[in-house]
Image (cartoon, rainbow, N blue to C red; front, side, top):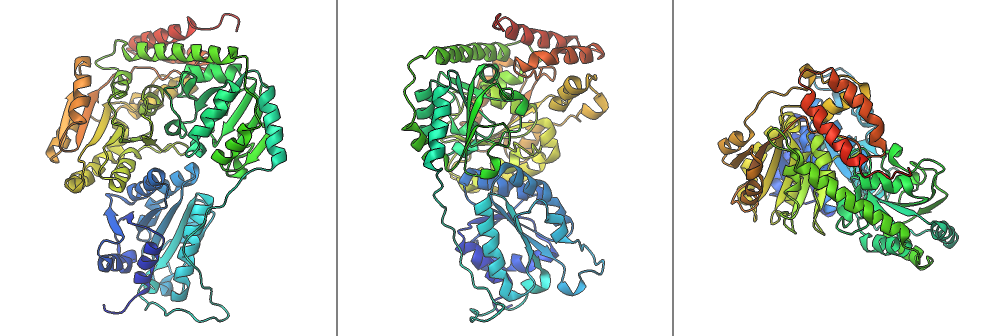
Length: 599
């Protein structure tokens, strides 16, 4: 086909928005765009996933690691439906993604045609900020421009629906000025957003008056670590992060309490239980039961998105603005803290937590402790690495045990918490920077969900990477462990084996079959060597660690103490629950012996 088509115009507009890579899967409803991508000769490149859901998750991962817009493409009908999980991941974690979705010809819409779905209705919630069907060639560029601009401005997924017959239409010439024609431009200049002086003054008054200040740092501090640290040190504050905030804060600092929430640390729990003032920076973390109790602390919140201000805690002063600039302006208004008694207390909690974490990683397990396996990566992780983390019990071990070197990004599906994101995220990170090593931390449930399939993608692409190191840790315990512990904690029920047992699968052997390297480890003495071999290998590696499903997912004290009765009642109903009960009691004892007797 020699004529320039609307499909070619779409691909050209992607280039004008700086898109270098799109993720997707072909189908007849999007084939005209596939033809345009073929004619574009790799600019942008198409990355074929094994499933449209994985392609959408790759687009989310791309947006998180690069800070740009992730782009995914699919056909109509089932292909479109498969995108939803990844697009909701983008929506809930607030990252920009644009989906290009094929559709049947406009002449058959409404006829119950094959693979016909009302895509406007399908996507109207997940793409609430912008979803539009292109009904005329002259409309295509405008719709694409609005989708990209909206995705960037609102940090959300946007959807462009492209009927097949419109894709095949000749590309229009530059439109003349006339009624009913809108001419647009690509590109978006980000605004400078800073709060009003009077709001900064009010925030400084609240923070200066506090005697026990705590910070909660989220992903909105991505470019503000220096300013967060300066404010924390000026206030003599302790700092904890959300899961999304963990990569943007130095956890090696003596007043760094780690991750907050159900899967967080005891130091973070004590920080928020004891503070009288809270400063939230770029976080919308939903674990509100782990915040200070309402009325306990006066609070200030900084967020670029005013919709998040006051959304999780009854704040006194809200500062809508860029985190770095807002904290810089706030810093000059804050006095130096003379009494560092609170800071010293926080640092004591941090030391205690490090002791607890080390003890737990060395606890006797059958055959391996997952905590030991993940903790062994700290200190070995290359300074230029990128990390992806799947959802499940592995998320707890990442949050509590893995210390990221400065500058190392780690990403996961936090708010949607979708299993199966680890391998797609890791591939997106590697394809964006193929000269950097990648480590993916994944459970066996997520591997069986879609990770096994995406290892096929890894096997087909790794020879093109400047640095072939791509390490997948699979925690193999034959159990959907996080849900098993949730059944005990939240319902007081024993583990339901029928719903929780996973089929056995040889993950390391499968890697070997694909031409990768598989390492199976089931002895504590082999853990360090497994990591060392994997991180120096000449090809991607799957480490299959055979770990103990009974290692508890005990929430951090003080909140976790209230869960012990439910855990113990559930374990008492299980055949063979004695081992899990012993591990639970040991963890509880570690917490209790460090409790403040004054309460």
